Length: 181
Image (cartoon, rainbow, N blue to C red; front, side, top):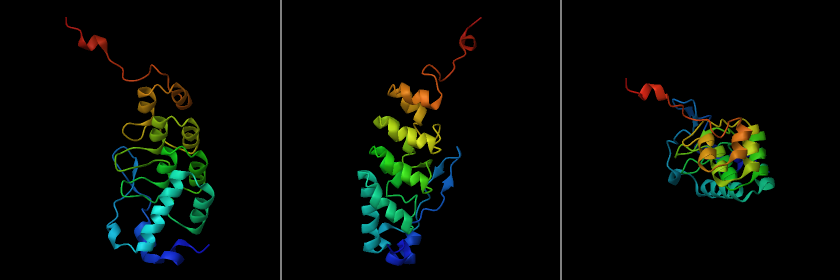
């Protein structure tokens, strides 16, 4: 299979690459905004990107792996800031998520809404994906809401246990500070 650059040109490759990302004040990796609008990309590059996102959503690990091996950006994002890993995770595809992580995808890139792949998997109840992401280095405290908060909200005790968090842990309120003398 030809490389991404060979098939779609250096210009398309540069436009599709999101780089390593910037970090926000919490240290979370954010997908950097692309200075080019999608309409400036060649139609073939737009078609390929749409196909790649569909492969991640559908869990077609074998085909997506071939594109990853050919050099597509591992942290490629769509217009919503969702990476291939976010889409694979949110749609319950643990094998695809593992392949992307093993290939160098960043488990901590937040989408345009500040959500992490692991929080999305917790929300959807995909325990196998949560485990893959956690073991692949996902930070359970990144994003809004983060994975721990999602696990508490949706009573995913198995996720809290995996994260090493007790179900009752959380915000500590100093009762004495509110007492009047």
